[in-house]
Length: 139
Image (cartoon, rainbow, N blue to C red; front, side, top):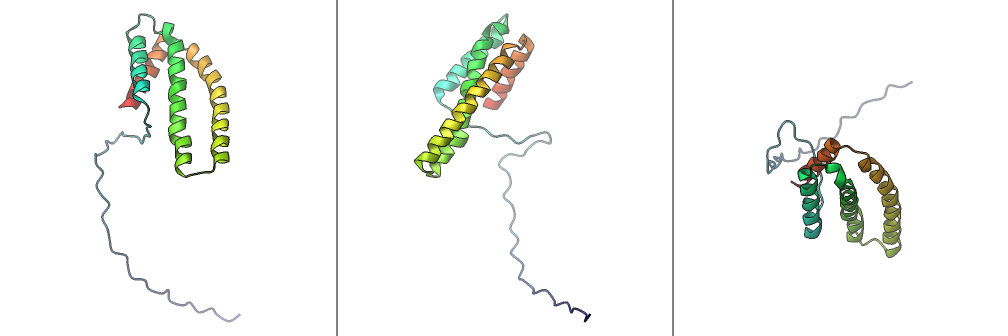
C-alpha cells in the first residue's frame, strides 16, 4: 500500500474572546439549580392560608386533605405553566394542544390518587416538612 500523506489542517482565524457575563447573584457552594413557575395571586393566598393552618395546628394531620388539594392544584398550575402555556406560545395547532391537555388530564388523575394516598398517610412531622418545602419553593 502506498503511504497516505497527511494534509495540513486549514487554519481558521480564532474567534474573538468574549467574557461570559457575571451572574446576577453569586451562587453559594451548596446552591442547587431550581425552576419555578408563576401562579395566580389567588392560588398564592390559598397556599399561604393552608401552610399557616397546618404549621400552627396542634394536630397538623387534621389538615392533610387541604394539603393534598393544595399540592394537586400547585401541580396542575405548574404543568399548565411549563407545558401547556409553552405549547400555546409555539402556536402548535389546535389538535396538538388538545391532545396535550387530554394527556395531562389523565396524568393528573393518576397522580391525584397517588398523592392522596401518600399525603393521607403522612405523620405530623412529614406534613410539616412538606409545608417547609413548599415555602422554600415560594422564595
